[in-house]
Image (cartoon, rainbow, N blue to C red):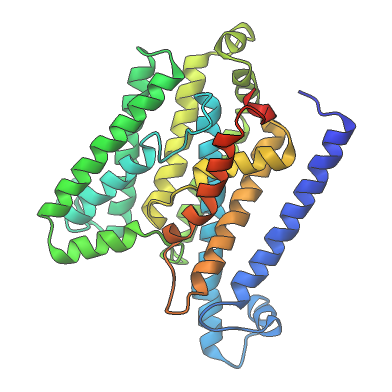
Amino acid sequence: MQMNSPGKSRYIIVMSILAAMLLVLLAACTMLGSVSIDAASILSIITGKGCDNQAWEVIILQSRLPMIATALLAGAALSVSGLLLQTTYNNPLAGPSILGVSTGAGLGVAIVMLAMGGTVGGIFGETIGSYFATLLGAFAGAGIVLFILIAFSAIVKSGTMLLIIGILVSYLASSVISLLNSLATESSISNYVAWGLGTFSNVSVSQLPVYSCLIIVSLIGSSLMVKPLNALLMGTRYAENMGVNVKHTRNTLLLITGVLTAVVTAFCGPIGFIGLVVPHIARLITGTSNHRRLIPATIITGADITLLCTLLSSLGPNGVIPINAITPIIGVPIILYVIINRRKIQYFN
């Protein structure tokens, strides 16, 4: 899947624009918010020279920089998850939320927050704190959904049928969450609802290394799957003729998707539309379905979109706007465009 010279030139131009947008958004997210901070003071704080206003140092180092890193990585993680699922199931509407992976992770978090009070009993009678308990709950919930999908993939060969199974599992998980809500205390429900609105500001400086490492390792793993992903674009039979173990590849892709989705969901809440929309944006602007080019483009595009959402959420007139109140405004028009123009878009033909 070599690109011709015009295609390569287009890709370089697009990636340069995306990188420039990323730098602009990084600067805007650092400077703007409930408190505006000038660029000179930010540069002085970041370089360690300090600032006369101690409150600004706390805002930049303890709040805005961790929030920016969280949003950037979440956008990359969810976008790549959506790309992997859309290629795996050869379906433009596949995504972490559609297949039930996000909902499964949300169910795990709901069990921890609503049924267990935010903690999990340890093996030796100790208690795991809410931070690790939420993370474990998200991994367990996403893992159960992935196990169901992998189990059914051995029986059902159709990608469309597996997508339907994922949707059914998502509905089932949602019903269990509703049941837990009806039985939980008012304070637990309030905490869960706040978590469900989605935010990139809950990851602290101490939690950021764990969050970052899990996502970066998984993104590297997705980059190593470029060849089988490109083979799957040509169909299952073609991939098998090329020596690709389709079953093993699908299971590996589901595992990577599960880790990326579970981490973001545990720390940031169930962020909608990013995983579904960004892969389409990346394909449309780059004009390629070659995953060697598409994965980097998807990562940067996802980071741009989530940073834009973060910027918009921080500029609310009456406080911070929930992320999930912004993503549909960006996502719905794009999905409608893709559905209406599906026959005209080259990568669907």
